[in-house]
Image 1 (cartoon, rainbow, N blue to C red):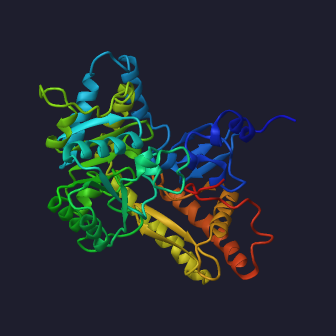
Image 2 (image 1 turned 180 degrees about the horizontal axis):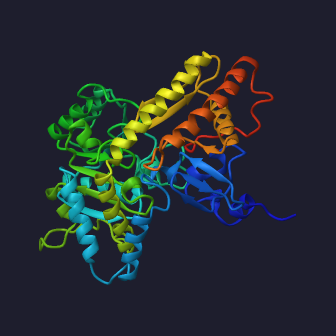
Image 3 (image 1 turned 30 degrees about the horizontal axis):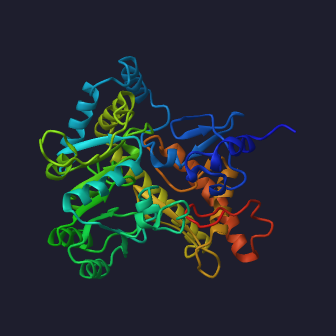
Length: 432
């Protein structure tokens, strides 16, 4: 018997993909196991089947798949040599662009993925302060695959205990829990690293209170903008909320799916990673052969141009508002608004699936995703792109009405006969 794509993937790639969020356990059984290409808001499997996509390259594709302007900008940089022996003019222009764009940014280091720059931010904060401890919100699921973070989670196998014992946890929106850490570890906390928000609105002044606590205690205030950057606001969630981090990290939507990440921030901290201060002890901040690859930075420059020119961030908010209201209205009409609803920010909504007792249910979430796929809509979560327009909205709401009608029946009669898939699993779990 000929091997399936899934079998071939798992045979040679641990996990079947290079990001766990793309794994088979994250999608219903009727999802395509492999994709061949993307165009606009759509992806295609090798057999030519077309799906309206809301995963959008793990939220990295914010304009749309295969955008010609961005592709051409990338190709022009490839023809210039792509990766030169010394710093390129392209990386200088990209760095200047980011510094001009983000008010808190004086200097920047580019890399290829988020874990590199968040780990570099932690290293820089420790070097700047001479302190060891790092504080993070327990509710925020991921900052890095490096030991300092992943070793502090339930997936600690293969990490060194000593590397994560200096990672402390507090509760998002609970400033007292962070104050308690500063009191328990006086003058020992190098930094607080956190997302400004995910799906939960920060309480009034919470982010400012975190910022003030960091400054009062000599800790570096780091905002991770992997998800919020270039979605909440062109200048990031930091501008949206009116805060000023000492350091910030970006990735995902920087370059419409091309691999770019950035550590950025205040000169007095960032310059520690430099080489001009003779006699100063060095910090080996980051050193990546491909970190300033010209093709990806060309894509970043063009993506920023399109974001500004076409008011893309405004589109995220407008489309998302219509989508959230539309799905929630369907749930209300079916009388299941307490069991299925879309919440969070319109620019990056989140759908919540619960069982009849009101508990969050992965089985019910799987059922909804399964039924959306029956109408060729892949919605593992909701990442809006500029390529999602009114046609896509109408398709989505029509499919959601059908899916939620089945969801309603499953609430009444049970999942038997409705759920035809394995149940999706959390990425962050201790056992397979």
